[in-house]
Amino acid sequence: MTSTHLAILFLTLFSFPSFAQKHELGKVTMEELNEKKCPLDPVDFEYPNQEKLNVNLMIPEGYAVELLPEPKNLSMKDSLANFKYNAIKNGNQIQIACTFDINRAIIGPQHYEALKAFYKEIVDKQTEKIVLKKV
Image (cartoon, rainbow, N blue to C red; front, side, top):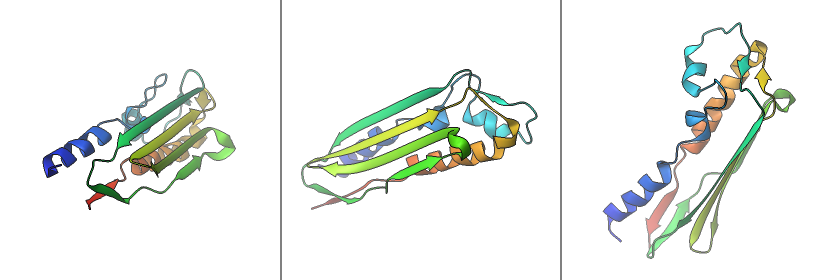
């Protein structure tokens, strides 16, 4: 496999938008959270929701996993929202599982900064790299 093929593998993996970057439940997007300075209104997701993403990637012949992101579980105060991320090597595959829960339709303005920090942690986690090395 050439370096071009390996680059395509990485582009394929990271072309999946992260939950937080693309998350558009109700009226809320990450862009809107970043634009607000000090919201007076609650953040309205319209309804509680759960999103799951499961990805299975084949490790190309002649390559081995050098680095996988560590698992991560995040939870906002009072379990307003939760996020779970796990990437494991299973034989000649990498399995990535993400779960994103919004447990309340409306999150009050007092939780705005915590929600913004929560989204940032999700984006940071989902942009960590998986490193393969040629063997």
